[in-house]
Image (cartoon, rainbow, N blue to C red; front, side, top):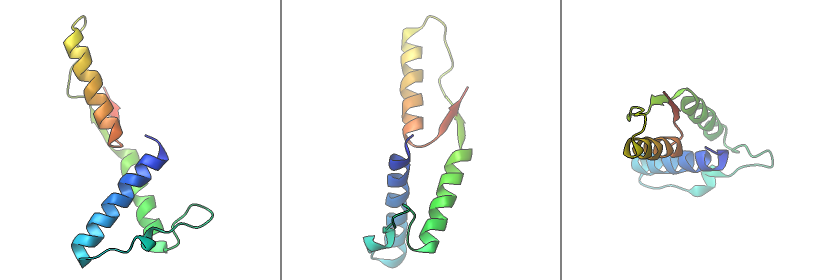
Length: 92
């Protein structure tokens, strides 16, 4: 997953959680400086933590490899794309 998509997931989650907690959210909280880091240190720290948490997430594809079965291969490919789009690393 590219960094822009991962950042988008982080910002959406940050906004949703902040809104749930406070009943409001100011998008200025997610302002970044010229170095592309968040200006507010707590937000930058949360971003680092988010990236680290995604880096260690690894899941096994729920569809086993079935030699010669095109439906199984298709299901496996769809599952893997879906998992990867969520920032997960697929193993096995």
